[in-house]
Image (cartoon, rainbow, N blue to C red; front, side):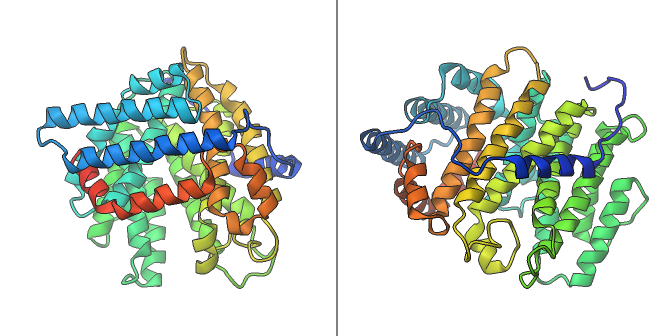
Length: 412
């Protein structure tokens, strides 16, 4: 597929209009789930979750020193987690087998080592954020029937946004400098000869050069069109920092869809160089749906920071019940586009992808329970493997052991 005849890069505005149309046509009633869980089942699952967390923490406290022993420990923990997933959230044997033999673990370790080598000052949280994107792109390699590997472009693209985010979030950098950087970055993505203005830009421009070394600009212009598309989406998202904006003054949903959609679509072009229109449409919709997940998870900090999202904008005025339902139904609609991928043997991965979107939104809603009605959260919790209160306790427990978890993660 990488050497197929070049296809035109899809126009973003029609993709966004189609997705916005799908949003407004999505039902606001509760989306169907596979099955409800009894309180007895939930409590049994929660006991297993507590036991798995405690066993994992004990293993990490006595983590071995040699690489071979560390590999064995990591594999055992993954096997334990896979077994736990089968017993509690309904992972199938085929899904577990697919993931365990996919090479994701090996790629994850390779990426973490490369990231620490390239940026010794980068923290565990930033590496984890970048690793999430690496594994998303590995999943797209599977969808495309390509070998699972850490390509130079996967590394570079996954590191670009920790680098640029850190720079743009740096309070010591003046706003006019940030605007000037954004303009220089756009020119560099277009292929202009731009000199970096500071050491941070040296890093960022080096990642663009890495992508250029793998994907020739003349042969694969869609790769660079996709990078410019996400840059425009990120730039537009700055309009969401308008806490005093009146309703309808800012296209909150359209901007969120464009930011999320172009991000995952760029993943696809960097993996495959060319996409069919159906594949591009699915990836755009998937990215937009994942943006909704992030926005629902972050409704509390976004509200406090004055960042506009469809959830934070109304959280103090109306329950989010119907918006959450609409997001779930939109996710179901988007997942129908998985038919655009037909690589042999990927059905378990497609099923897991579709299931994960629904579960992510379910638990995001549970985390934002104060912004939903009590009746809605009670109805939603019936479809959760774990009660929302148990998930909160587990997250607090893991947060208390953050130093241990980060030290282990950085030792990969």
